[in-house]
Image 1: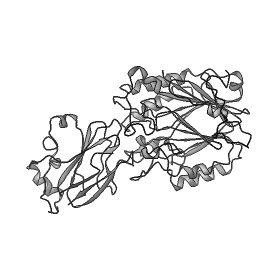
Image 2: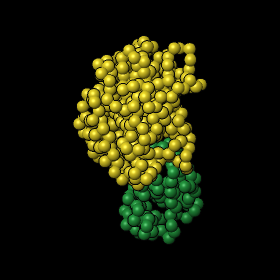
Image 3: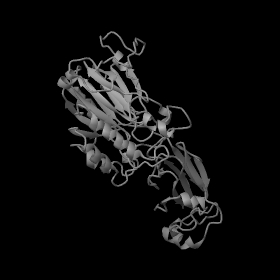
Length: 322
Length: 138
């Protein structure tokens, strides 16, 4: 598999910062819009994309891959997708078919639609059926609004019970952040001081060459503040990560693939498995969008991320269910 | 303030125009206090009035495209206000002081709250906090 296939774009545009010897073209090849299948691979701490397909022998030997699934909204029964459970199951089947199997899976929130009884179980049971060693769950607002996060934290809160957590895997530092608890009237996604303090401390010990991957539900960058597609103290969190040579931020919430590169930080939002949402600012407001039935699966999907040790890009590949 | 709330699957209720007067619990039945009269009624006394059926349609606030149709609403004390979710997203109606709190409202589900006492009641959707509104009770 050629790392530069399919979506290669020789971009030396203004968004590519210079002077640090890092080739970021890989990022710009990852404009994985609906209907495409991309894989991001990380080498030298930078993600790059390739067409979705089996990993090369070299990747298998030295690296690993993980899957990001997002916004499964179990319990959604709206017109935008009358069979959200079916499309979720289709995504699970795609994960099961990955070869090699992902090392772990990260769910970036809105696991459930309304926290109805059994909804979390539907997801955890389905993901247990994959070959991934572990699954990490980040909450979306739909997972915590009814009980202030009690059920989520009880199930997935981690050793400290806070929900935010980090781990290291084969030289990459992974961080899961929560920005959907304690919403205030008129406010936005928020991490809060306690979590920011924890994050600062968490990354202090790392060398700047450590690749860092951050997960959170609501985008940490300002996708569209008018619709609440932003985290109000996201900038503070990112300031702690600026010294790292490669930071990849993976978000959900907006049910569409968007990407931005800022310095050494690349931002990616993911597709939902349940329903699409409008592009920022298109129409009167956010919310489920009904598309013609034959197009639905081309706007739903999941993401695979490949890491190749010692090679330049971490690679992110988005694929739709079409 | 104890909760005269209900959250119900409301599609048929709206369709048939029952509007919170028949078929709900006694607490939910609206008794409209005259304008200017402050309501000191306890829950018990409100229940005692429950046989009175509202003569007028009660105010309804629809939620569409992440907006409350009447972000500021002024009503006399004793009025029951109903919110109806027309979005496919889940929304809530939650007082900033926790005076009232709906469950998650799915499409065509409604929530009602009886404002017994005068005051300014600010509220928002706890899933989409940019959605805010207030009810002014006189």
